Structure formats: C-alpha cells, structure tokens
Image (cartoon, rainbow, N blue to C red; front, top):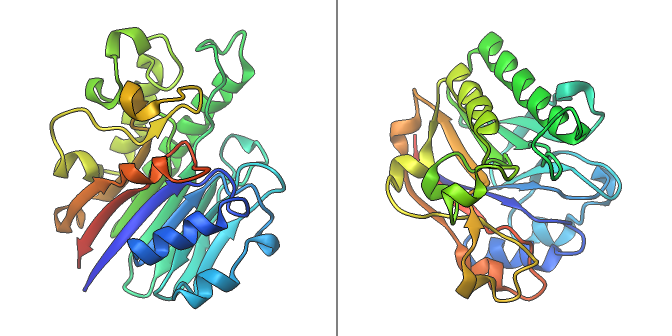
Length: 262
C-alpha cells in the first residue's frame, strides 16, 4: 500500500481554509498534518474538507493559537496527545491509520527571540519541551511510526540561508540542534526528507518580513518528516512545495511531502 503524507504549518486553518482545500485538490495527499491551526477543534471547518475526501480527523485545538490536526482519507483513531513541558498548549496529536502506521504531529514552541533561558522564558520552555519529547520516545520506543510537524529547528548547515549568521539566532543555535538530535536518536527516527534530498539548500519557511521572499530566499527548513527505522526505507519522493508560499495570503511555511510504500 502506498500513501502520501504532507505536513504544513497553516497559520490559522479558518483564515486559510481555501488554501488547505486548494492543496487537497491540487496535490491530494492521503494524510495532511497541520500545525498552528489557531482554532478550537469544534470550529475547524470540516465541510469542504469532507467533500474533498478527507472524512477523518484527529485534532487538538485552542482559541487563537497553537493547535494540531491530522486530516486523512484513510480511517484514523486518536492514540495519544501529550502536553510536554506542561505548557497547557495544543501542540501534539497522534493517530493510528488503518494500515497500522502511527502518525505523530508536533508543533514545537518557537522559543522567542533570545537564545538564553535565563532572560527568555520561552527559550527555556522550548528546550524543556524537546527534553520531554526525548524522554517520551526513549520510554515508548516507537515502531512503524512517522513524526511530522513544525519542529521550529533547522538542524543542518544547508537547512538555513547562512549558517554562520544564524548560529546565534533561535531555531539554529547549537543547543537547539543538539536537543533535536537527542530527540531524534531517542526514537530511532530517520529524517526522511534529507534521506531523499541529501545535499543542497532546502527550506520550508520564509519570513513575512521579507517582501520579496522568493528572490531574497532567506529561508530555513523548520518543517520535518521523520520515520522510524523499520519503515524509513519505504519512503520516497520527498519534496517541499515551495510555490505554495507564493499563494495569495499565504502561510509563511510551505508544505513538505513524502510518499511511503508499505
């Protein structure tokens, strides 16, 4: 069985319902994971998505911020939803597809502006969140699983537009990169995107502050698709749909795709 999965920080599913529907129509992933939905679950617009074949959803929501949802053409049942770092935020949902694959959808805290937990509480929360993710996967030892989401860290030098300039910028600091690596190792996760696209600059986020984001191309790869090592070799056709960042009233993120043959 082959299925395609996508992850996308939508920056308000209600405001950008039309963009979600357009992606569902034009790219038609079997599973679409959204972050930063900014909506209570009961107010997520479902009618149009159902009409496009996405009749199944598991989600955690909040009014105005955070929020994660998994839309699927296949049946999916919720199996977990963690509140790492006890923030009271809707940042994680996990569902098991009818083919037995568990999908974890994460929205890791951004971490604020200063990479110093002594003066920036949000940075400390981000590091604590990652530590608890690591401990969770150390304890659970996932199998036949996929982890996706806006992890808010660009780990590799070629995941940012300028490695040296961003070393002290939140999302690319060594302490964050190390914390993400520990989380990845804990679950024996394979970075599917970079397994498929091992070399070269690759981004999934471009700041709203850049008016000509496409030409300036000062991006970062903050959005990820990982798979446990038992199924990672089945993944292929990874890509970032960069053009979506140029749609009218876009999110500042572009969706990331991968296909799995299981």
